[in-house]
Structure formats: structure tokens, C-alpha cells
Image 1 (cartoon, rainbow, N blue to C red):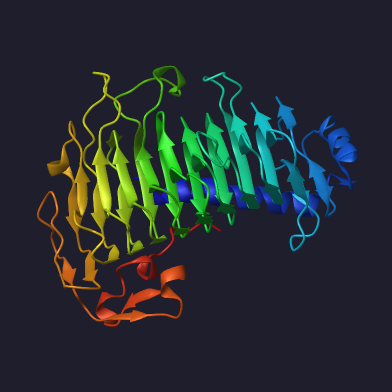
Image 2 (cartoon, rainbow, N blue to C red; image 1 turned 90 degrees about the vertical axis):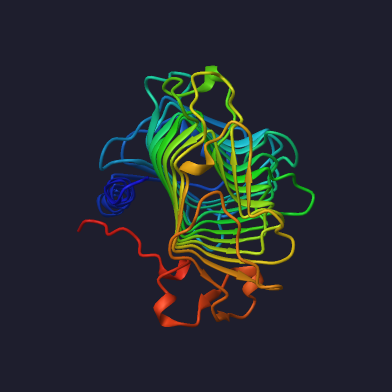
Length: 395
């Protein structure tokens, strides 16, 4: 699972970087149109902040081999967070390739057919992109079908995606291939009619040490969280091992709808805890093996605990188990299960310890849209998203 030290090292470090630049303000470049932005991007260096005035900007921007430095990142930001500049036109808005110490903030991206944003290592698997921060980015209407992602990340280490909104996409809201030591937090993933939306967050291709916390997933694809996936062997970073994903933590999130909110796919472990899951369309979770190469071990050893699950008659099978997996290595403990209809108890691959079924719940206003459901009994309020405590960050 992603540890407290991971959260502290990645997320807190990213915050300190932004504050240093704000205080030091080595150089600020103000731009008000696409021509000015393109000119500014050709002269990037550590400590430069490119500040974009509100308005429409042309997409198709490529930034390759550019790096800030520790304490002096390169910042590309909308000047007014309440009226962010909007990218339109082209295959994708921004492509960062083989970059490091870059902050993107207060930007909007709309209507790109390929990807909204693309961040990768330039195909050099031994030198990943690293120390990338995306904050308050809105990516709308990507695709709408096929492998076209709102945010595509390949070979990116030590990153933070914070306070972003993803609405309507073809493949993934965030697609990670071979990414390591990252945090996705306080984001919204919302499905949109007419968009395929395979999943909201996909972690595959050797992805490890990722924390997804305190996000809202609303009708966010067939699998809202895909712990693993199916990756061509040539794309694994840094190399093919025995899993698609390992040491993934999903905590403090609220899920509304989706065919299956959680799917483990050719994964090594994974800790899913203190989430609130409301009215899945078919399954609560899935355990699958989609990568059949003999080097891969069966999907195994996931932990599902302290989650609050509210379901109805659409859930006939609670856990969809595919062939070639090891479902009996999974552990279920301390979850709350609440049937809106007949009061059914869940049928799981292994016996659960400390399960609570049909306790009294408090349903907040518009609970089907925002996930505001909590146990009425104070003794049970440590369960679900409301009971999640974020890992402490160092001073």
C-alpha cells in the first residue's frame, strides 16, 4: 500500500515547492494570447512563472526536455483561478515530454479528440519525467470514444494531481502507465452522456506506490478505479515484473454509480479502505486477470476494509471473480453493508471479519449526487469516507 511517508514526501514536498516560488518570484512572464504563450514556452528555465490571462488559447503545445530544479520549478498557471484560460483546438492541449519540476495550475482544457493533457518520459524508460504537479486543472469532453484520456501519464514519478476536475472522456480520466510515487487527491471525476468512459483512474504497466484519496467519482466509467489493467509488454516501466500494479492505496473517496467502483486487475495487493460506495450499477468490485503472460502472478492479496457500501437490487453478484485469479487471498474486514431494498448480506470470496449490515444511516441532501451518507451511530463513524484521516504532513 502507499504509506504515510509516501504522502508526506510527495504531496508536502510539492506544496513547499510552490510556496518557495511564490515567495522568491525569480521571474514572471505575463501572456495574453497563444502567440505570447508559445514564445514564453521557448524560453523556460528554473524559477520562471508563465502567467496566462483569461481567454481562449490554441492547443497542440509541446514542451520537451525542459526542467526546473528543486525549490525552483517552472510554473505555467492561469492568472485568475476563477476565470482560467481555456485551451481548444488540436489533438491535445499540452504535451510535456521528459520534463521535471513543472507545475501546471488554474487551466481549463475542452473538447480534444486525442488526449486532454499528456505527460511522458519521452520513451526513455530509465529517465522518467518527475516532480510534476497539476493543480486546479479542468479537463472536459475528451474523446469521446476509444483510448483517449483526459490525462495520460506514462513514465512519471513523484507527482501530485490535486483539486482537478475531469468530465467526459473516452478511455480514462487519468491513465497511468509505469508511474511511481504519486498522489491523486481532492479531484472530481464525472461521467458525461455520450462519452465511453472505461474508467476514471487506471494504474497499470508497472505502476507502484500511488495514493488516491478524497476524490468524488460520479458515474465515472465501467470501472471507476482500475488497480491494474492490460498493458502491452513493451510499454512496462521500468520493466515487466509479475504485476500490472502494486502498492496502491484508495482511501477516503466517494463513489456514486459505475458498473464496478473498484476493480483489481492482474494486481499485487492494493489497499482500499475508508471509502463510501453508493449504488453501483452491477458489482461492488471485480477481481480479474487480463494479462496472461506466464511472468505474471494471479491477481491476489487485495484488502477491502472499513468501507461503507450502499447498494440496491442492481447488485446481484457482489464480487465478480474472473478466471486465473486468487480470490481467497483477498481480505475483507470491518465494512458496513446497507441494502436499500431487501436487506441482503453480501456474498464475498472469503469470510469477512467485523462486518456490519443494515445499521441506521443518515442520508444528506442530494446524497445520490454527492455521496453524503454517514452511519447514524457515532461508534460506526470511523467507517467510510467520513472516517478517513489523511496522513500527516511534516512541518
